[in-house]
Image (cartoon, rainbow, N blue to C red; front, side, top):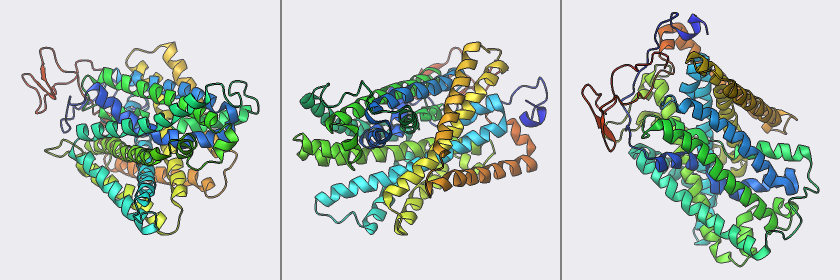
Amino acid sequence: MSTQETGRQPGEEQPVRSDRGLAHDSMTQLEVMAQSVAAIAPSAVMASLPVLIALYAGPAAWMSFVAAIVVVVLVGLCVAQFARRFASSGSLYSYVARGLGPTGAFAAGWGLVIGYTCIAMVGVIGTGLYLGNFLETLGLPATSTIGYVVLFVIAAVGAAAFAIIGIKISTRLGLVLEIISVTAVLVVLVVVLARNGIAAGPSQFSFEGASFDGVTFGIVLAVLGFVGFESAASLGAEARDPHRTIPRAVVGSALIVGGLYVFATYTSVLGFDGPENLSASTAPISDLAEQNGLGGLTWIVDLGVTASFFAVIIASINAAARVLYTMGEEDVLPAALGQAHRTHKTPHVAIAVIAPVVGLVPVLLVATGTAAFNVIGYAGTLGTFGYMLAYLLMAASLPFFLRRRGEANPLSTVLAVVVVVALLYVFFKNVWPVPPSPYNLLPWIFLAVLVLGLAWYFSVRVRNPEVLREVGMMEEEPLPPGTVQDGARARDDGAGPLGRSTDRDPDPRR
């Protein structure tokens, strides 16, 4: 890493800064886990993604999810390597800075912002669609274009309000909504399994009719069902004992929702008596409920999936805002983004910037005639490109990060290489063979947005090169010996206003 890239002279200590604007030490293990789970939106994935995967992977669709779990857990183990050593609200942006320097860090952070923002848009549309269907059953005209637009606005404004009010409230709400929604979907699937028996229908273990290419493309789709699982890392400032709670949340959420996905996929194929029938369904969980004597529960399923989509809006806004907040604090983006609410201890300015984008883009596209389901596809694909870029850069930076700390080891290097190769394959399968229009344009749109962000970064770098010294240096320092913790606060002599030590980290390698 050159002096020009790092902004430091050889041997010069890194200017570690401890942020004091957010609600430090306020999030329990369960609440940190809730952030990752809500960002994934498992019930929404369980209700929709098995249909697409079965279309390509056939009876081996569940195997695509098993392989995807392996890939995602390996990514999570890379995240854990960083999270065990330092914590920051900058998430993967801060991680990459410690390995690849400021430019790689900005690319990763900007990719995350694109990813979180686009997935929040998916949440807005999904909330509007499923809530509109529910309201229609009550006799309310909510599935017209005007009705959807109104619901989109309500969803975006409501999610932003919860995100501003407080991270504890918003993550707890997200957890409750996901528990409700996952329970509704699981009730249907368990009844299907009980009525059909695990071995009914065409065998899903013989893989007859499945192809290698179909299963591998199914893996690509299945990985998309996990994006957002790393978002717990953005709670580095607010998590209690973040060096333990964040790695557990990231890896644990991948394993938990992965198990749900495998069960949902296997049972859905079973319930429809084969992947062909499943692929022909537009609302598989509702159809399974009708077929198995649970027609009276379809409205609960609709509300459950609505809740899941709403939870993903909140979780995505929370994560994106904290990445922007850290980049604003470090002067890479406008400093206003680095302001936190005095009362709620949330990055309210960053939330106020993200929320209009999250709400207005779906409104404008649907109002001008684009089908809502198509908007979900477009936004989801763009968002996935952002996540994949951040994951890839994070994995690539791991060996350099450990080497700079004097902790390099062959196992971590092998882990990083495997993850990079796997993610490059996912990228490749998303762009080749060239997908039909307009999906063939989406990689270029993503590239254009990425270049716009990098253009801002390089302009800052030229105007104010000393900013490079601060990129990725926002770190939540360990509490010093003798500190007394009391709930969300900690007290000691010389502590900052929220209980974090204002002294430098005693380990200069950090």
